[in-house]
Length: 298
Image 1 (cartoon, rainbow, N blue to C red):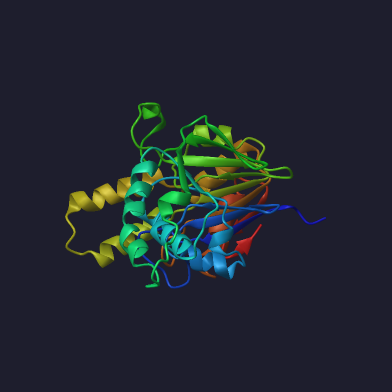
Image 2: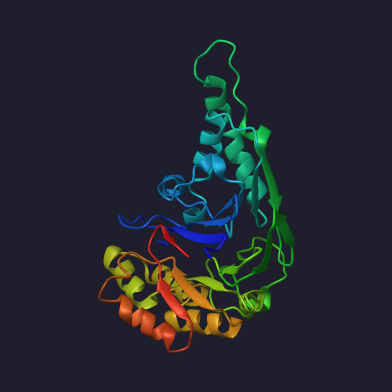
């Protein structure tokens, strides 16, 4: 029997560099008639269309964090929803800072709203009329119809020894639907809290980073970059992202049934490199492993 819940990887690239063959981070969770967008990176609305879902069909958007590669299409979503006269609520969830970002984007809709279509007497709904923002924090539970969403802080911004100190957060998300459970790590390094959140999930969707290859490309593309800046980038990649073995270990300790890897750097996953990455994950994780492409459905 076909599952009522599907997960579509709309954008499997890691940012901030744009890639010709992969869109920036965004994913679609469909449960029954509900469509939930997870992150909203550059190109998300076009990818939704290619997946057969119109942006007006979205019930909610959930942001894992506020790096620009994960929020770049939010303005397009608000503005185009306004121009097509959306009136149903568009609910946007995300960690602290989401309200400030969305409020600024809504203010930026003032001019196109005033312009409208140049029809005398016509008045478009404004984005602030239909947009509802709710900031979420670790431990919160949100019901979106029959989908239960819970979350925890991860280690994309800081180590676990610094969790609970307030400020901006990067979140991992768990979705429990009537027929499946799905964990989306977002961007993170190794993190026990994420493993605990993902206990027993059917599908573990996690980011994957090749630190060495990425740093080689950074050095080649920026030969004049100061050494301290190179070291800062290297530390971020190594501590706040996941190597293949780390991703597999987290999924294994979660007891997940299946793993989907996403968030690839430019040129990372090729026909030549993919078998090695898969083998390194499978060495520590016994379930099915997928190195996802854009618009793959699970």
